[in-house]
Amino acid sequence: MLLAQLTCFGQGKTIRVDFYKTPFTVSVDQSVLTDLVQQPKSSELASALHVVSKSNFRPLIDSLSAYRERLNLNDWLYYQLVRRVAEQIAPKDDNYARYTFYKWFIMAQSGFDVRLALANIKIILYIYNDEEINDIPYFMVDDKKFTCLNYHDYAKADLNSNPPKPVLLKIAGAVKPFSYRVTMMPDFKPEDDFEKTLSFMYGHKKYHFSIKLNSQRQAAFANYPGVSFDSYFNIPMSNEAYASLIPLLKKNVAGMNEQKGVDYLMRFTRYAFLYENDEENFGREKRLSPEETLLSNYSDCDDRAALFYYLVKEIYNLPMIALLYPTHITMAVSFDKPVGQPILYKGKYYSLCEPTPQNEDLKIGQLSSRLKNKPFDIVYHYEPSARH
Image 1 (cartoon, rainbow, N blue to C red):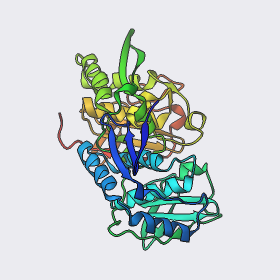
Image 2: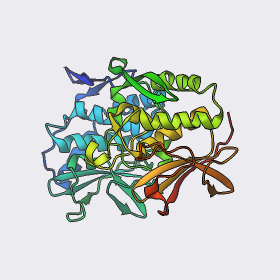
Image 3: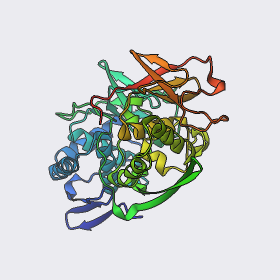
């Protein structure tokens, strides 16, 4: 599957990245290209910066900036583009340090406060980020938190036993914090669109769905870290996925009252997907956004909670809370009349809605027997600003 192509010409390279629906193309001047040893010292990285800083790099940065603005890319999705551009300038498998150097240089020239550090043979890329990220290393500099952008490339390396030593390189204007929050979803390359069929039983009737998805959406979030519940619950669906699922769900619940409609969405989320925990599925804890849950063959309770939240928000826009137990997360919805044993939170009653398969056939308002009398925290609260 072609993600990008590279053509050499007289004094440089032409880069074309086919990832998002609109291809990114730019000519990179020969002067931008520099050599770097596989395991560089700080002095060698400084020398590479000296060379590239004097090059004709500005057309590359200007083209990236214009493309980002045109597609309205959030920081994370912009970084996915930068990764692919750096791969074309300096292929990752040929020289990982050189590839990482160009990622650092492009992100810094794009205004982000991004740093390099060395740990034996490892070259670490850190970026200023003040959000809640729970599964990647970070370090503090001048009371600012820097999270590791390339930790996934070092397969659970213990950076505490061998702390990376910062490389003191400066680029003027590189001061912005980076955000993992994604609020806009671009269209991806249409050649990678595919349809996924889902079905489940509700009220003695089998409901069928054919959802339009794109494999590059999954690639864009392959290394997405464990962000806050607020961030990952609210990652939007692509236009294609939304258009193929949400109107059909709205049609299916149109004749139901609000509580029964939410019950329908709860059981869709519970039974239309196969369950598997993240350790078995990914070999690590990984929170899937709503569309990633549609894309994945398997999903767990975090993923179901996010998808259920998204569907209820889009179709009914009801107040909701997320309840985190020691080994489980579930949801509760505020109806006009509470059901079962409701939970009082900030003046409203919330009825439990379990979106993950359990040993019992739980109805709205019912909690799994294994969780009764277990402590929980309310880790996310949604209060609609305006009802549909």
